Image (tube, rainbow, N blue to C red; front, side, top):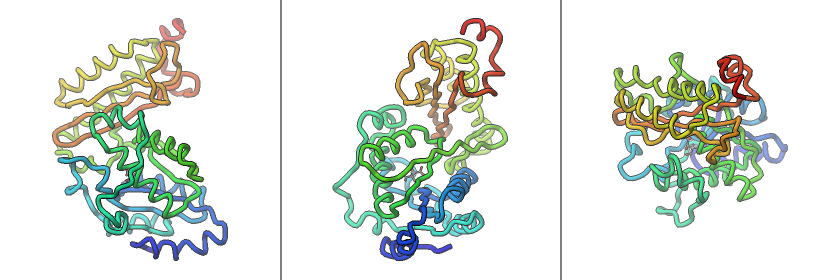
Length: 298
Ligand code: PAF
């Protein structure tokens, strides 16, 4: 695996692949890699001739008072994991390399979608993400780019920006990897105290509870969300939101058969997010768990 820290060096390393019309896959990350990231690399490996992983803790997507300074930076360990995962090129630029003029005057903003859910609680966050992802697309010029479905809203923002700005990149969403107790893997889980770590799976349990209610026929979206918020609060979480949306992140009709349930909640100093897709039509596992009363209502 080659490591490149400059745009010039990366271009030199990619010349042969570009000339040979190889399929280039990009996995953008902020490092502190875990099995969820490695899954993205493995997917990229399946579809691409050459896999580039970027590690860059992007200051533009962190708000004032957020965890930019303490975000875990573990480049040596990350490098070993990437070698084992058969990554071809690690692109690990410095802030100066990515933002030659700081503050950068040009920002990419995906209107509407970026202002709700996490965007409402982290102003400017998705503009920071959209800007750095656009820069990475221009620098690496990948054919395919891989992102985790755990960051469902981020994935939606990136799909929209790719379409709106005509980036010739195919966006691939990769399902969430979970710990045995259901907690979605995230670099921020490392911040959790042992006590909070033992509480954290309640988020996934709550998602599953709402999914079961939807599958049982409930369409009382506001009521379900309010009950879920109350449950999380009673266990010491500070929920930013629990939302039931259609998979395009709009508010669902009562006739909907496909939803994404999204949660963001603070536990101690750690902000956790997770989501669950529920689809009556397509998910035989969920359908088979559907209570008999739900079949009667449908
Ligand atoms: O999901 C992340 O790790 C980051 O938001 C991303 C996509 C690498 C942009 O900095």
